[in-house]
Length: 90
Image (cartoon, rainbow, N blue to C red; front, side):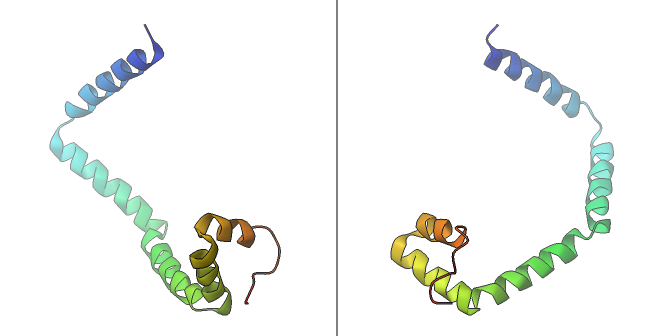
């Protein structure tokens, strides 16, 4: 049997097992997983990341990167940013 078909069969068996789990147990498991992420600080981390992203976009380096991406394209601007050389215009 080709590998793709074997993989598809494995996925189908797993999906059938999951479909047999009672809905109330799935809901409780989802709540438990979400609570674990919350306890690890997921919401706080996302909030801080959003704040930092907003701040970074308005620094001289962030403005220079945006301008360079508009001039040379995003891939080139990222190559330059990641090269270790100083960011132009910052």
